[in-house]
Length: 240
Image 1 (cartoon, rainbow, N blue to C red):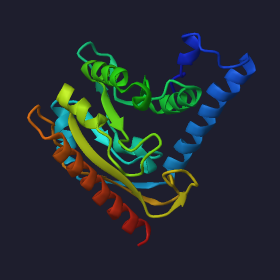
Image 2 (cartoon, helix red, strand yellow):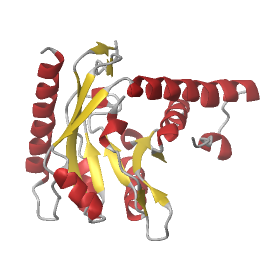
Image 3 (cartoon, helix red, strand yellow):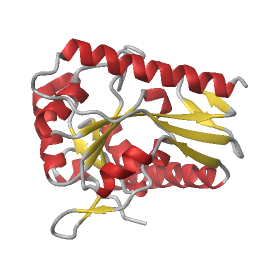
């Protein structure tokens, strides 16, 4: 397993005493990641509609997995790929993680899954965050984006994912991870965590690109509708 760097500490932002740093940014992320990995081992996973996505991966195309925030916990199951850039360096999926202590803790957790964190917050400085994401895609990273995150409004699509796709030519791939049984957390999005030994289905929507001539509002409404249709399907599976 990789040893996650503490990026904020490297840049000089105070994170507390050495003991607090070890506890909050090493031990807690490790325990959280280990718990998710152990849970994942109990799940019966199936993927649907992945042929087009595999074709893009085989063709060395960049992709942007797009999903609602409440499905985040097991979303690494939607990216079972290993990729490298032209220089042979490991590449995979990246996420936007806020430049804060909470963001640092989140980034340190996801790094155990091989997920790369691009630091920044679209709400605070959207232009700067977009530039960093564009750079990451050009360096060979795919992206995972929750267009209603990090704090809502619930299931309302913000324009960042379309802007990233338009600027990079990456393919947007709507995706949803559904659970046959799950816990619902008391969070703004009612975050879902699958119960051990649940059936899990990863369903992909049809990939598409955003051209310079595309109507942004039409594309936004279409993608939002697709994600909400996937959410409805996932809820029906959960109550079956």
